[in-house]
Image 1 (cartoon, rainbow, N blue to C red):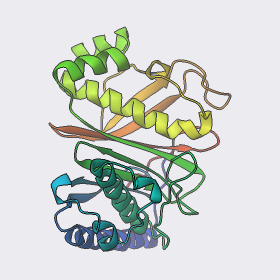
Image 2: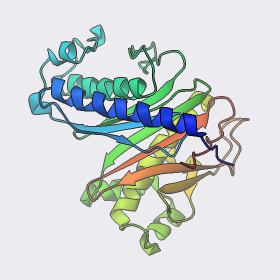
Image 3: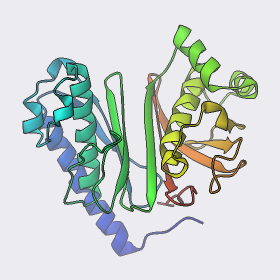
Amino acid sequence: MGSRLGPVAVIAASSMRASAVRHLTALSARSLGFLKDVTLHDTGYVDAVLVHGRFDFECYTEDLFHKLALAFPPSLCTALPLRRAEFLAGRAMAGAALQALGQLNTEIPIGPDRAPVWPKGSVGSITHARGHCACFAKGDPGWQAGVDIEEIASGHALESILSMTANQRERALIARQTALPPDRLATLLFSAKETLFKGLYPVVRRFFGFDCAELRTPPANGCLRLHLTQTLCRELPAGESYDIRFNTTADWVLTWLAVHRLRGKPDYPSRM
C-alpha cells in the first residue's frame, strides 16, 4: 500500500518544492543560456525528486563549471568538449535534485568505477541524450535509483531498437496496442529497460541483457510494467515485476524507477 503524508509533511514538501523551483530558475540564469527549460517533475515516489532540462552545446564554456559552482574533475581534461558539456549538465541537474531533497552537500565526485558517488543519505541516477539531461534522486540510501531519457527513434534507429530490445511477443504487442504510437512505445521500452538495468545493477553486480525483462501489457497511467524472464540473483527471481514510471512527448521519453538496494523490490508510490 502507498504512504500518505500528514498535513505538516505536506506543507513542508510544498515549501521545499517552492524553494527548489526558485533554485532552478536561478540555476538557468547563471548558466548563461546553457541550461534551458529546467523543470521539477512529479515522481510518484515518496522523498524523491526528478529534475529534467535541456542543454545547449553552443553555449558551453569551461568557465560555466565555476559559474555553476561545480568541480571540474581531472578525468575530463582529455575529454571532448561535448562530453564535458554532458557532464556539466548532468551534475547541474543532480545538484539541483539534491538541493530539492534538502541535502546540504551537493557534490557528486566520480567513483573508482566511474559511477557518481552520492552524498551520504541519498542515492540517484543521471542521464543525458541529444541535448536533454535529467536526474532522479531519492533521500534514502537504502534505495537505488534509475533514470533514462531517449529521443523518439525513427528509421534505421527504430529498426535497431526493435531488433535489440524487443522479443517477438513484445514486437507483436507494440504493433497491436493503441496506448501509444508504435515508435514511441518502442523507444519507451528501450528506455525502460535501460532504467531497470540502472536500478537493479547494484543488486545484481553484473551485466544483464534486454532479454532478461519483458513487457506483457500496454503501458497505462504513466507506468510501464516489466517482468523478469529469468532469475538474476537470489533476491531477483524470474517473474518479479517492476513498474517503470515515464513521461513522454512527441520527441522524447523519460523513464525512472526506485528499487530497494538489498531486496530489489520497487518502492511504494506516494498517493499525493
